[in-house]
Length: 70
Picture 1 (cartoon, rainbow, N blue to C red):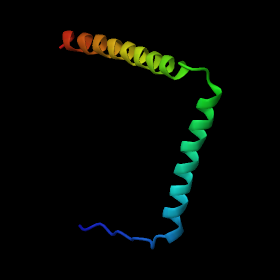
Picture 2 (tube, rainbow, N blue to C red):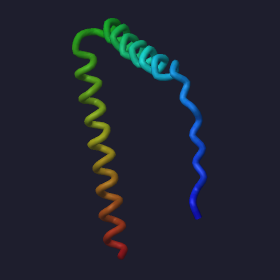
Picture 3 (cartoon, one colour):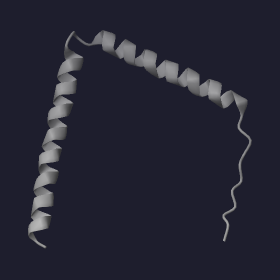
Picture 4 (cartoon, rainbow, N blue to C red):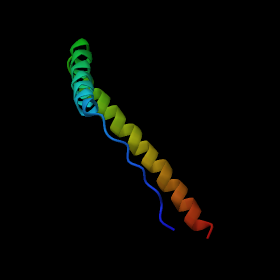
């Protein structure tokens, strides 16, 4: 059975509004970065990487345990 799809007409202002919101977000990030001391961004990125590597280790251990119970 074919699905019914109803397409609503797009408001032409939506695309422009999204572009403005994207530009605002980028500028907000720049403002936030200006408040942070130099190097903070690098430390944040390194901390995020370590956190993700920790999650990877936990997932690997869970996978190993699952494979052993087969």
